[in-house]
Image (cartoon, rainbow, N blue to C red; front, top):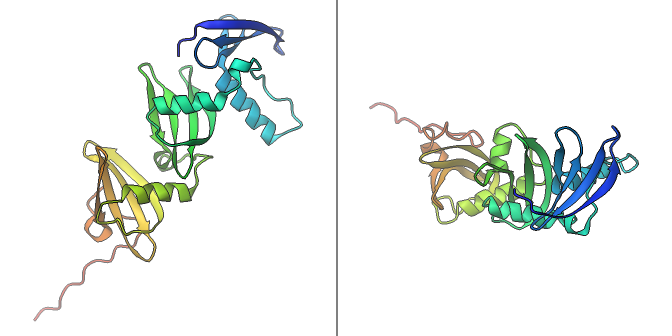
Length: 230
């Protein structure tokens, strides 16, 4: 993101004796800049969420440097704006920076009552990965609960054959040109594989979905009985 610097102050020095500056931007939070060669800039959203979580994990430890200028303090509002830019339409209830790729920060967004997401700035805008897909990849989202993910799957089933399913478990199965596939396990009933494409969902009972993205694994699929000969 482009920053037009509107203010800058010397904050002191790092443990290595390098000058540390804090800047603000005309739009959005600013940066902490270490006067190394070359200089290293850390966004205030990244710095402040790291300091906040470090303090929560160990209140007696010295936290990493954080931004203190008033224009840099509302990191939640900044992350909510990033989430909207990435196409995440929920109400953000928690957020944090979790890493960087090629100098661009990755954020985890927690959503009120529904599946969260990981978002990242790209060369052309923003990308997002829903937490259901993050779990599929073997990682976790700290701010999203199974109940919130089940509620998301339940909402996606609305208007389909599986609309009556009370989702008590589910998973992201994968995506292709034909859409994004999920499995929903239903309380006391047969589960479904369903496909979402262009905002529309289509559900298939597990017994009929064995050829779709590997079929159901959360719901036992009973093979149809074969009538005896004669």
